[in-house]
Length: 111
Length: 110
Image (cartoon, rainbow over all chains, first blue to last red; front, side):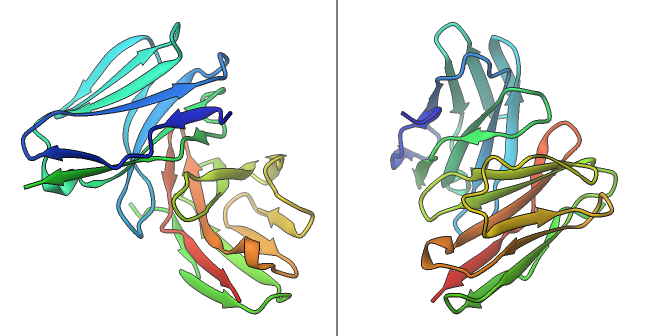
C-alpha cells in the first residue's frame, strides 16, 4: 500500500462545475499536506498547503483536511479548461522535510 | 526573483554512461530536495540537503546514485553506469517552508 493514495482518474467535469479531488494517507505522523498542479511536460506547481483540520480557501480552490480519517481533498469551483492538469497530493512528516506524493489525479475540464 | 533552475533540460545517455544533473536553488533557500518522477507517477523522494549537509539519502535507489551540495547552494546529482530503468524526469526542489520545483531534467537511457 502506498503511503499517499489518489484516484488516478481521469476525472472529467464540465466547465463551470465543481471538481473534487481526493487523497488518503497512511502515516499518522504526517503533519503537512500540499496540493500541486502539474501540466503535461511541466514541473509541479504549488496550489495549496494545509496543516490543520478543517477547510482552507484560496480563490476558487478549497483544501480540506481530516486527520482522524486521514483524508485530504481539493475542491475547484467554477472549473475552467485551463484547470485541466494532473493534481498531486503530498504529505510531509516534518515541516520543511521530504514529501511523499500520490500518483496524481488527471483532471479534464470540458468546455 | 529567479526560481529553481536545472540543467540540462534533456539528456540522452547510452547505457553504462555516467551523467551529472545540476540544480540551482532559489537564493537563500537552505533546503534542497531531489525527486525522481517516472511517467504517469508522482515524484519519488531521492535525497535531501540542508545547506551542504546531506541529511537524508534513503530514497537513492542504488549506490550508482550520488548527490552533493559542497557549498550549500548548487547541487549535482550523479548517476554512474546508467541503466534503462534510470530513465525518468529528475526534479529538484528548494524550500524555505514549502517546496518549489525546478523544470526538471528528462533523462533517457538507451
